[in-house]
Amino acid sequence: MLTIHIFVFLTAATHQLAFAARKDVDQIVSLPGLTYDVQFKQYSGYLQGTTGVNLHYWLVESQSATPSTDPLILWLNGGPGCSSVKGLIKELGPFHPNPDGVTLFENVYSWNKKANVLFVEMPKNTGFSFQNTSLNNGTTYNDETTGADTLAAVKDFFDSYPEYRTRDFYVMGVSYGGVYVPLLTNLLIKEIQAGRLTANLVGIAIGNGQLKVTQIINSNMVLLYAHGLIGKDDWDSLQKCCPNTTLVDCDFSQWLTLNTDGVPYPVNITTECGGIVADLGLARVWATLNNVYNIYQDCYQKPATSSKTSFASSEVPLPGSRSAENAFIDQGSMINWASTDAFGGYSCYADSAAERFLNTPIVRDALHIPSEAPTWQTCSSIGHLVAEL
Ligand SMILES: *[C@@H]1O[C@H](CO)[C@@H](O)[C@H](O)[C@H]1NC(C)=O
Ligand SMILES: *[C@@H]1O[C@H](CO)[C@@H](O)[C@H](O)[C@H]1NC(C)=O
Ligand SMILES: *[C@@H]1O[C@H](CO)[C@@H](O)[C@H](O)[C@H]1NC(C)=O
Ligand SMILES: *[C@@H]1O[C@H](CO)[C@@H](O)[C@H](O)[C@H]1NC(C)=O
View 1 (tube, helix red, strand yellow):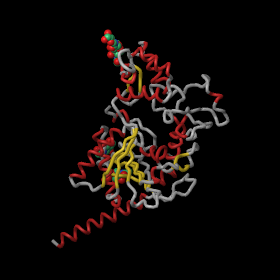
View 2: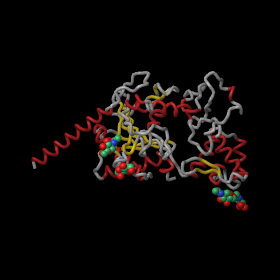
View 3: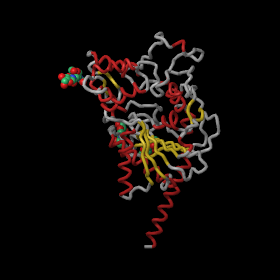
View 4: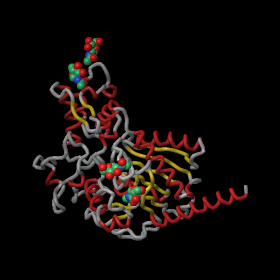
């Protein structure tokens, strides 16, 4: 008995050493482009998914005075195929890229002011995540494979950072995260109940979550009116299309729907109502300069010297990529140098600035990204392989 106990103890101790070493290796000691001193620790490296699947993670510890008692948030972006590092660098993380794609400025609203935030890039081959083809050539993408890889990665995280096991743990995500978050949480609960995972899971949160196509389309029409993107006359003109119901109960999805990539396209456009709904619910949102991530503002392509009013006319060419065929537009090509909005037109240039920053060799080195990992993209083309709408 005694021998066995010693053996177990030594094995555990050896594991602890190995994990501590990996955490040390993954610490980001100096991130190029920072224009201010960060007062928190951050780590970037890989978590093990299923065999041969290496999921990139970036952990930013809390900026509060008590990071060691603050909660842990796992953050998952959607798509599918959009990088969770996009969430860090464009959305809720501690710093954002300037238009130069080289320097970073502080996001004073960062969620890591109060929480430790773990960004995991999934599914496989999203962002810096990659597959080791000498171990796994699998090409299957679905919610089950994504769930299995992410679950394994989360378990690997807690093995590597055991101090987080007792911390309040939240799983949060956006968009297609409306599918990932509940599916992963279901798996986590089963693992915890079976005694295969020790973690203090206390809650989930979903922003702008994936819904059924009919719910997305129908709620979107109401949202556009409620936020003033379409006017009262436009709204009233829809009444003839839904004569027997109030407009909030109308099924607009008979004229507008989503393809499997989540991209909206019109159906029955040759009918009068098909034309009206396609115009109000699609063309005026996606085929204009409207900034879909900040709908009260437009994106602009003019240089900084232009004034806002000088290009509010039809002389402005519509960006070619901005169409119903490609709703996930390259916002980075639409830099709003002259923006007056509170975010400085940030979301218009953020995609290309983030891609330029993250693909800089010294930045990849600082983040411990190996040469086998792909060029970082905000969203990869694997989305249509994953979506199960
Ligand atoms: C891929 O797996 C092989 C076999 O385990 C290993 O030798 C190699 O280092 C791995 N490559 C990467 C980039 O992790
Ligand atoms: C994956 O395919 C490559 C190229 O055909 C091959 O070298 C490798 O052994 C394969 N990996 C596995 C795990 O079968
Ligand atoms: C509206 O209701 C009337 C009377 O019940 C019916 O004849 C008509 O077909 C309905 N129209 C639609 C578009 O459902
Ligand atoms: C197009 O309109 C016709 C006639 O109203 C209807 O029967 C059909 O279901 C519509 N098609 C789609 C894809 O909604």
